[in-house]
Image 1 (cartoon, one colour):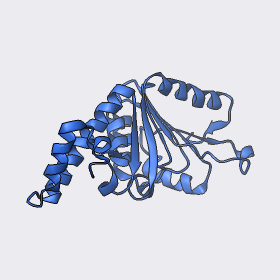
Image 2 (tube, one colour):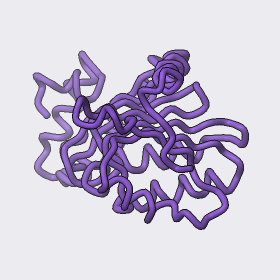
Image 3 (cartoon, one colour):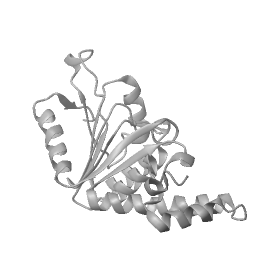
Length: 218
């Protein structure tokens, strides 16, 4: 951070910005302390802006360059925890595996508390095996699972990734629900609050109604 970008980084300008530049340039001030304070400040600013705009950038990536941006895995867990009894969690994804352990655990908790969970995934033997691990067929409460109908195999892939909770909030991004996608890879997404979440659910439901996706969990 320099006098040339301090306004963008810290959100302050003028005399306050000049004073802050002098403080962080002081060799007696510990660099790690300055970094920690600025990171905390930037995180607070980012969340405040997100709440006012209805959108928030989410990512999977190194914390040292996050600029206050929250990570994919804890955001998904928080999103699922916010679901209430009677609400529906709709998850669309190319791949879902047991490697995303905390997310799978929270999905099972949702099922136990009476929250509806619908999954729309790509048709593949890998998904079949992984979903059996995540949600064993002998369990009383399991999600409703949809995939491309068999005659459409090879024509297209279910490559979209979105999580909609209660028609009020959704996460749209590049990350699969895997350990790599939520904790290791470089992934980006947008957390969106508001009526767009309901429209997204309607879009997916329309594709289910038209049988682009059919139930495979029966």
